[in-house]
Amino acid sequence: MQPHPASYRDTEGFIFKHDGNMYRYIHPNYEVHYAQLMNSGLYEELFKKNMLVAHREIYETGSFHFSEGRVLLPEQIPFISYPYEWSFDMWKDAALLTLHIAQAALHKGMMLKDATPFNIQFFKGRPIFIDTLSFENYVAGKPWIAYRQFCECFLAPLLLMHYCHPGTHKLFSVYPNGIPMDVLANLLPNRSKWNMNTMLHVHLQVKFAGKPNQKPGSENNFSKQKLEILLKGLESFVQKLSLKKIKTTWDDYYTGTILGDDYLIAKTALVKTFISDLEYGHVIDLGANDGHFSSLFAPGIQVIATDADPNCINDLYLRSRQDGRANILPLVIDFTSPSPAIGWNNAERESITSRLKADLVLALALVHHLAIAKNVPLHLIAGWLQPMGEHLIIEFVPKTDEKVKLLLQNRKDIFDKYDLENFKTIFANTYQVVKEEKVGNTDRVLFLMKRK
Amino acid sequence: MQTILLYIDPGSGSYILQMIIAAVLGISFFFKNFWLAIKTFLFGKRPGKDEEKDKAE
Image 1 (spheres, each protein chain N blue to C red):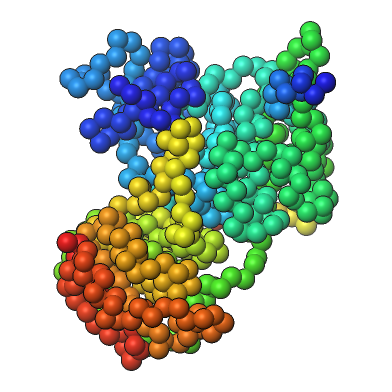
Image 2 (tube, rainbow over the protein chains, first blue to last red):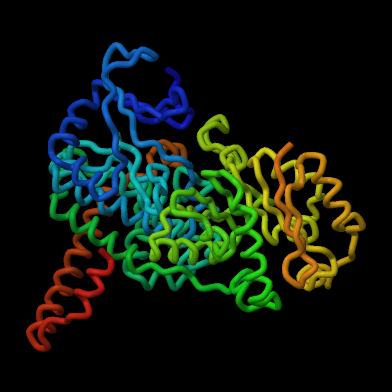
């Protein structure tokens, strides 16, 4: 069995894919920790609170065999997202989950040996811990081995989004093993030094980097109480962090712009008619904005709602969390610079293009932004959308539209071929048009297309 | 000196740092609880705090 390309760090086990399912192999040298996890009641407590992914042990299988150790079949996560695609409050919930789990583990005589957001996935609207092998038996007197990792992997992106800009989480795709503390300390404004927690966890940590851990001969005497204080302190610090408010172009796109209620009502009615005859289980909403169209789908349908604007996606996450719309997974993705394949040998984390697959793709009020604002030719847009899903609902916004006029206001119109006829001709190469309707009293046209 | 530093894990120092942080936070928690106890004694139980906690859960 070949381990997954990202599963090479831990010598105590690995994950592998077989027949479309992800499995986890546990080496005998992890057995003592695994026994504590299962027998102490920690696994049951965490899985009942939906904090840890459920698993069952596989005893008999004809298709693969290990001479020793165990094989677990975890509950399968339908879509793998990566931290650099999350918005602020998704990061915050993931960080708090890690700290809750660490505290729960400590009560049961265990501790987390690592603290990376790659151990967390968003499942049914909430973050869930997926790395069953992260737990190890607590050794009295030892400090938290994953403390620095927690600071670099969770605190750093959160502090950047808190102090600098909502979009700075993207820096994590450049530093997927954690944003180094000295890089962070140089990026944060000077006023961050006036915050006791930032001073302690970031600026002081930079001062201590490179110093030997302890004097030779001195004993480990970091008491359990101190460890609890550290975890509790981190938790209250993360809890207090908020997203820096910066107004973006896409705030109030539907509510505060020239496109009023009539347009939105007409478009909603059309989309509802279009989807009524289709069969689908997975939907991708490209340029989801406030998630108005993502929320049209039934709770059983998984919707991946993407937008380049971190504020829109964060608002959508908070609203979906509040309304219990667990089927919507909001992600911050700029398709002119999509998440690449990264990590060792470019194989650890897949690109977003290879992960985005669905039965139905929504591209509403998107094409003109790609074609006019970003100069992406229509045939490239059609070629990009085609592998993503069987059906496509796409809105064409012509040059006569107020929004396109706005886009062209301060630049030369070099888009001779941007018109409805040409759009239809180009998309006809890869799609068959099923339905075509004008949206209300605007010049915009909505299409339902089926992949050829 | 430079070459030696290259071989020191940047995570080193984390033990002393965790000791300092736990001490500082411990004192800070002590005073926070002390202050809360005084406020509770003077003004009684604050219902707002519990409601917030319930919502969060």
